[in-house]
Amino acid sequence: MALNTGKLFGKTVYVSGASRGIGKAIALKFAKDGANVVVAAKTATPHPKLPGTIYSAAEEIEAAGGKCLPCVVDIRDEEAVKSSVEQAVRTFGGIDILVNNASAISLTGTLETSMKKYDLMNGINARGTYLCSQACLPYLKQSKNGHILNISPPLSMNPVWFKNHTAYTMAKYGMSMCVLGMSEEFKKDKIAVNGLWPRTAIATAAVEMLGGDDLMSKSRKPDIMADAAYVIVTKDAGSYTGQFAIDDTVLKEVGVKDLEPYSWVPGAELAPDYFIDEAIDFFTGGVVKDAAWKVPKKASGGGGGGVAGLFQKISSVVNEDMVKSIKAVYLFSLSGDEPGEWVVDLKNGAGSVSQDSSAAGGATCTMKMDSADFGKMFKGELNSMSAFMTGRLKIDGDMGQALKLEKLMKSVQKNSKL
Image 1 (tube, rainbow, N blue to C red):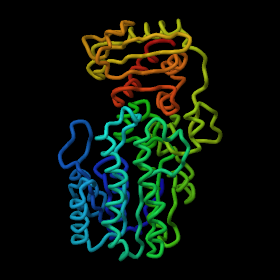
Image 2 (image 1 turned 90 degrees about the horizontal axis):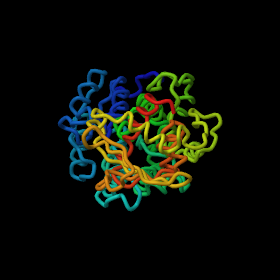
Image 3 (image 1 turned 60 degrees about the vertical axis):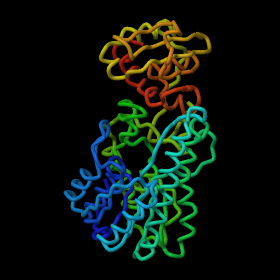
Image 4 (image 1 turned 120 degrees about the horizontal axis):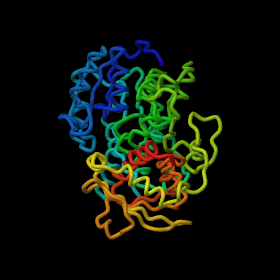
């Protein structure tokens, strides 16, 4: 892993969304140099499902060797942002680095994305990034090496990154467009504005929510983003700006050869993140060469008695504990060689599986896909996120509950020979 050099000693860093995940990892990395860290996030009291508050993060930052100013900030609130920036300047004397990390995600299609969700994503991702940058820029101009780093992807107009979640992509690309525009606008002031994005999934609460234990096991630790961020913000701001950097590439360029220590599960296959064009073949079922991940091998048909056999196996693993954990009713609407509708009730009693679609009244979500792809998915030969990204799996309803299917699939694979 990349070592600390002490270059950030005494520097002041404002990090949005730093109470957990990538933001906190970056804050801790900077703190090891003796930096002053402003933790700007909404979480002042413990969340029932997500770990960490601004105060627990502050304790860790100070234990790591930095000074910390925890600020309760909703970055959609202009006055709250400005007030926290002014408080940071009063406390530490200025601001040298801004990390725009706070982000909201909903991987839903146009008809499934409420305007409330749309406004949340665009308010935090695009507007919040713009606002924090605007508030910090007067002080960054006074810094000897001012940096803005947005945790945002490279800009690509390939439709695969838009078609299944247009609103989220618009919001996330809003952060990247800030990189594109502000890097040129403030080049004369020698303020660097760059983007940083992970090549693979990163083990955070958001990834666990989206893909469960399966996706977590195929992820890298947030430390890889923190180390890459450190490398970027310690570069000369006058010469390194307007870049859309990828975490492992940044580290390889400074001599980090062994990336295995960053794996959440040592030796595990890695799942690529969205928005990197090198990963398009993964999401479209093609063959990826010389990459950090592998594509699951192709298979034909559902096997094991076809679709009916698969649902029989699903029925055999359904139990009360699974019902308590998942609490959802899934309607599978299958097309292709073995069309039909199946209901998996993981909300009531000890759970059940049936072909009675009337039992799906008020289904939590409907999963639409080809019967052959359904077989591959439950056999572990087709990644559910890949299926969703490529449109082979269409989801109507609660996306968060839909992605809990990973737990069901793992139970089927573990307890049945598919």
